[in-house]
Length: 423
Image (tube, rainbow, N blue to C red; front, side, top):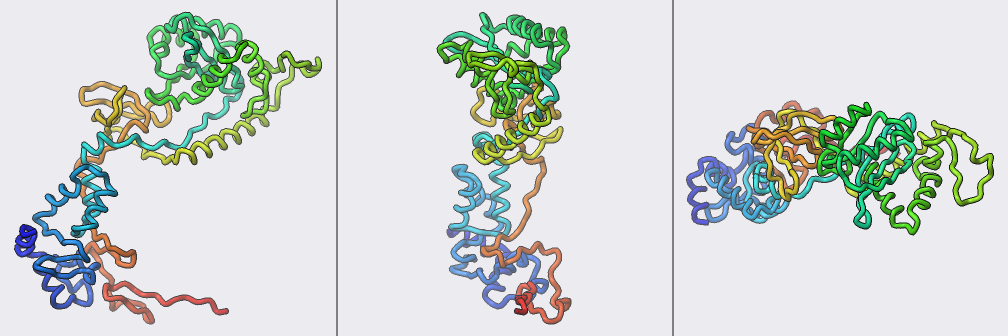
């Protein structure tokens, strides 16, 4: 405390401030010395006690000690709110809140150990304009056996194929057999598993002439359609008779479309163990407009409940050249500095380059934006009450230009009369 007293006595700006406090403040801010103007909005809260300048019960720290005091406030890396609360109990100077914000946001330790970023609003995939145009594929394991799950984005039709091995060649073979039954889709969506990112699978996609789309690594939500299909497939595989359960799934109306997957893919209902009239089994395509409208409503409901449940918040889009911290494979902290190279082919996905020159593709949620180099801290006064307006010293209200019939506070704020209804 003696050090603060000594620095206060040596601080020319605080000495000017003390003279104003002990004597009298000018009526208007423009008549105040420039060094004291930043204190003018809170002048009624300032006092002098034992050489120290106080704002309420908080010590006004001299300019020479503010950097050190900011470090003390941030000791323990408690986060923005706790640092502000800690400062509010003991110290103050103009612009403290914004300087705390800048300090915390630029602390590399805090950034590296920050929690995972919030989820963004759910992006619903538009319904394709016809069956088997876009399919999702994924691998799953059940009872120590591996299966390839194929799901049509339009009809939700499922194929569950046993996999002797999970190599790219075996996946390609199973897909080729499926294409022989239903045709080649235009687009195949998968995650970035080694079976789907190999040269063998790339060659297969080129041979079959379909577009292969992958979700961002470590972001299974990017392939949400296939993820949900895997959950359905696992429930089917748990049944006593999985093949019968699969047939029942294919023949049952889907909640998103109101029509069975088999009817949407094949154009007819399939015969099952339930007795069915022959005319019901005749080929007949469902109304496509009705299917599209119901699918849109169901996806809107899903997005609404997802967003509400997870408290989603959109993240600021990144631009090429933006510095970021990334969470790479198996990293528990934001420990990889990188730079954004550009956007990837899928939404909210970016290509980044690390300091070693390695390129990665990551979802926006796994990239923490860093402040641009050279960003400055805005100097401002943080009043205790919303009625006190912060001033920057640039332009101030002129009492001579106040409209007639209106009064002013000592700080120059215009007080407007209450408007009452003529009842």
